[in-house]
Length: 384
Image (cartoon, rainbow, N blue to C red):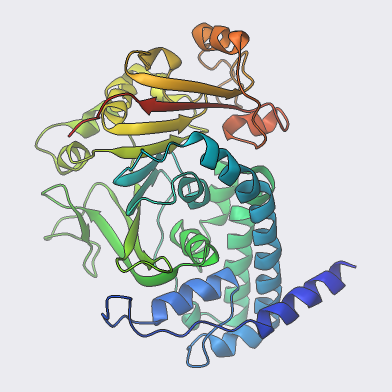
């Protein structure tokens, strides 16, 4: 039965018309290679002129395309199918953030975009390596198989659990053929139906801006402390490209230091739509107190689970707070058996909350319907 289903999926893939483009809506010519690359990784049909087209006939790629179609079917059912109705009801239309922000994100662009689909730019931060820009055309069949299968395993749990496991990502994204977070981001952008117009490796430059790295991985002759990748993409019907930046960064209070490239970068943050979950309770620590406050000061809306910003930091005079799901105690982790307790949050939940239909954060380990989610909307303008 499984083979029959996969066969039907492949027929649908072949029958689908691959998009052809040479210009953005603004008329600016773009290199179609980047969109071809993203669609190849995502298991989507190629243009007849695509340099990746010959690879799509390989058995390993046939399997990959089938796996990606199956994966995305689950994403649409288990993620988008629940989150979009929730967003429509509980994310106010008046919240117009300039940037969607997701600290401790791993490769999870799906949740960032699904909760905040209207942001012109997106920023993700985590400890996973961005990796090199993938070059499948330089791989032999065995290397391609190894790389594609690693990517499949790295992202598989986001479909079934709405959760990326850091241990699996660390293991699978370390493969040397299609490495790091960047390939997964390209898959998500392509599968969401967008056109990738450019991909580059970047870092935070001396002025606090995201700048491209040179061939040696440097900016102005120096290696940036914070680096990553940037994907530019077009959304159908829009005339301006959006940006998705992923940065490998270890957050701590000193990263906000004035005068440093990182401090200048964080100081430019404003009017963010923030989401964070499965954050290892790091924002509860003293060495991230300033970071937590900074993120709050610069955000107009925050969606999170209990492992993120402590509930006591949210002043009811400044934030309109709604609670969803269930909470009585934090989820213990293998390397954190005694996570921070939040009796004030437990009390707030005991008074009342709204049921939550989807898995969110560490609640996945408790079972469907047992996650917790806090939605906080600022009552007045955030940091200008």
